[in-house]
Amino acid sequence: MNKFFAAFLNDESGAVTVDWVVLAAATVGLGALIGTTIISNARTVATDTGTFISNIQAPS
Image (cartoon, rainbow, N blue to C red; front, side, top):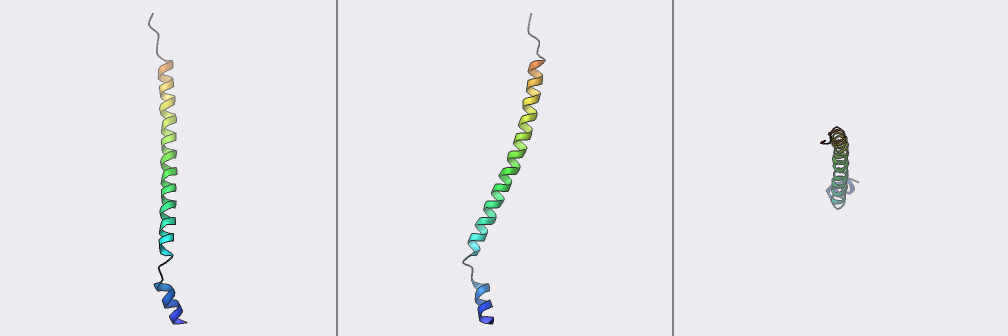
């Protein structure tokens, strides 16, 4: 039984898959976080720009 556990602990064949899954999950999470931040700030800039443009007086 100890040979089985020793062989199991030394086997690294599935470790690469776990690394890639963690890396992919981190990439997706960071992308979602950055996307949310950009969308929020873009709405603020768009609102401020619309307010600025609506307050411009046409020359007479």
